[in-house]
Length: 324
Image (cartoon, rainbow, N blue to C red):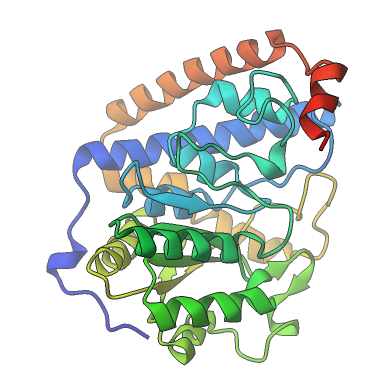
């Protein structure tokens, strides 16, 4: 695994970037809360996987990217999309299955994608985004570009074959991809210690020539620092990195999962390290934080109105989109 970063690398992000990270985290938290309410009222169909408790990973990682860099997401992907710069109106419309959504209402919660955002898409297949991100990185290398790709995935996905295959390929060709493993210690309801013989997942990288590092996934600044290092390494042509971000979801695997397998004391301990509260303390400017929250609430209210007022896809156009 990589050595610890130097003192120079441990500097704080610029204040504007700190506030942008907080904006993305607060927007994700409130967006998820609204979606859970809508789901329980029957306005959202299918599965809904909440990112509450894990917001710092997406916000910190995406803050280290340029707009033309890429991400590949997961079924728990709302935070990734927001942190990559999504418009809350189009996100809400997509999740509600409306024609004005990012995928015209066809993708829903688990399949949001946006070419304009360089978002390669969320994925309902566990680990499905890992080879997609690796392929995108290979495309960048072939074209001679300097963009990078972040692949977000879970501890459960790290036990799938595509994880090993993708890291091996990326290591051989030194592809510009960062594998960001969001370790929340459960694959659905299976504890990590019941699914793998070694729970130090960052240590899997060096087997494929990929440096690995473990980071506090509830600390957006810590995630940003490590991602920034990995991005710089990739842009220099030095190849991929594996970042294991340890965090914890605040509920079951999806909206219908009561999460009874989660020890209440353990969950309470993680909630004491609320990633939003931690970043608020690091920013240390209550008025600036309040201003961010006020703007997000206004954006979210407008997004709800926009989505609810938007039409659902009509049947002829829907069928035309899926016909060969």
